[in-house]
Image 1 (cartoon, one colour):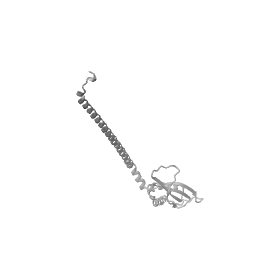
Image 2: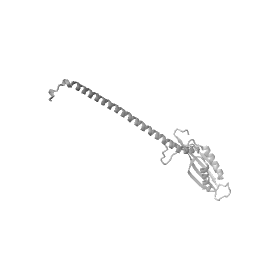
Image 3: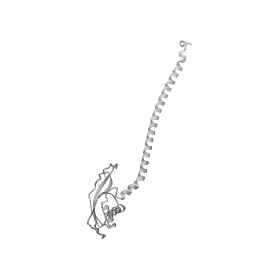
Image 4: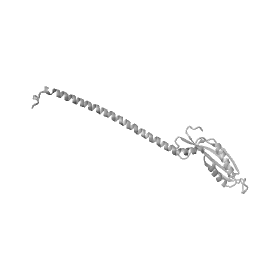
Length: 203
């Protein structure tokens, strides 16, 4: 059958129905694609939010573990006067008691105001800063072991953290006197009492 012999009047309704069906199908496909694209974006956003929440939860969990591990150490340093405000009255009191326990013949001291600690090595302290209070000691010793005994006792019983900056030891008389209160040696020592403070902490 030739194309010219086709009775288009008979096929008109079917063709119109076919065009309508194709248009509806294209519309449905377009709508379905738009809906899928919208849902895919929503899914991606929900997945990103879930991953962010998971990361945040893991970060909080890790912070809690760090706090649980280091808080007791922090509290211990705080109770010893290493972290927080300086405890110079405690330092002096502990020094006097140590001198009494080792029966030091003579002791005098001068303590300067607190200054920011200057280290020769690079220190990464975050939001914290180290401060030092210099203390000059003039000691009268029966013998040289009195000095090490004093420092050992201070380490054992004294609160706080200090470092010996310098120490000069010299004879005070030509002959050794065996009397317990005799000053056979004199020592001039410099101590640095160290305190760790957070930025903004009052001095």
